[in-house]
Length: 350
Ligand code: NAP
Ligand code: GDD
Image 1 (cartoon, rainbow, N blue to C red):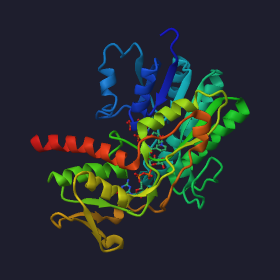
Image 2: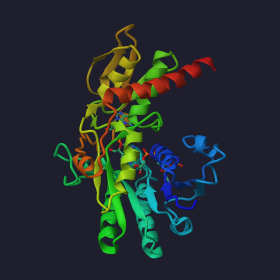
Image 3: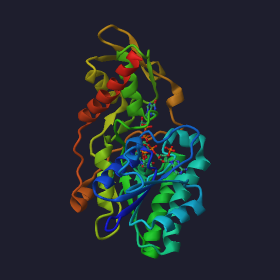
Image 4: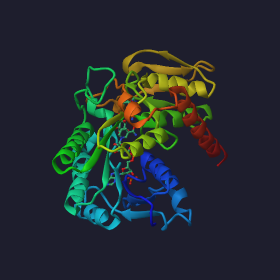
């Protein structure tokens, strides 16, 4: 559309991609998204957008593609000629990256290089956002982490994202490409993938309270994360590309909680209290109301190397971009529980 900015998004079917698309469409952008061919439907987070007939094929377009395919990425960059590119596509599960390290490196590391090379080779004046991550800090002993904290990756996922981070910096310096890293700490929502710990907990707690599930099995309950609300973080991504000079920014809340606290707050939001007993792999959580054992440990969810504690300082984003997280930890848990409890209730009827 004449006069509108055009954005190209990889990872459009994911949590962040779906929220970012809504935000950009609201701002008047034409949005092109890259989707992967799948044997089952993988577009449930954006279905509401392409069912909107006024939007689809006027301001919202989908293209098949994959970050492992250079010719595809080149073609899309050349064809779409985007003003802004958001590279959100990734094998984004840390534990899974230990099972598929080479694929994770291909997609999360080299996939980023493929975009940057396409920009360099076409000479397109576009702005590039890279979905970098707090996992880069991994084993750090510096709290809270800032943009100056040295990286210490602890997984194949983090190592692949480390390459992506530095190749963004290098192409910015070497070829003057407007390329930026958003170093985002964990951000969750009602659309979070169900194998990430927060959503696994809110789905399970809702189902347990409704009698649809017996028990929630988890790994490391003591792990601490800085959890924010995803829609606010995608707004931060957009802001990162709107300033005059390309740079790298942390988006975080500067508040950390354990997985254990997330479990407690989730059950509390459902009117239940968890009583913990035992330790290590024998730790368990029982409902105070009826004594039922509803939380246990399964070592299968332990990682070969764990990131114990992440805490981010978002001061630079606040000062330079005017970005601030709003949703508190308790509010985040409550809104995820509210959504999953409603969904679980529907399953009791079916
Ligand atoms: P997500 O829900 O797992 O979504 C990942 C997206 O990447 C999906 O659309 C997925 O497509 C796509 N994808 C996977 N492999 C691909 C490939 N080979 N080629 C093209 N696309 C591919 O992740 P998210 O939570 O929205 O996160 C978005 C990005 O931010 C990721 O890069 C993640 O690593 C990074 N990040 C996330 C967080 C967080 O807390 N959420 C924090 C820091 C950084 P399918 O739907 O077909 O699988
Ligand atoms: N997934 C999962 N499942 N994690 C568990 C479980 C479980 O049953 N039990 C404990 N955990 C712990 C993990 O060991 C980790 O310490 C913490 O919960 C959070 O795990 P995830 O929710 O899987 O997220 P993550 O922090 O490893 O990675 C997410 O955030 C990164 C940003 O820091 C992903 O979104 C990454 O893509 C992202 O870069």
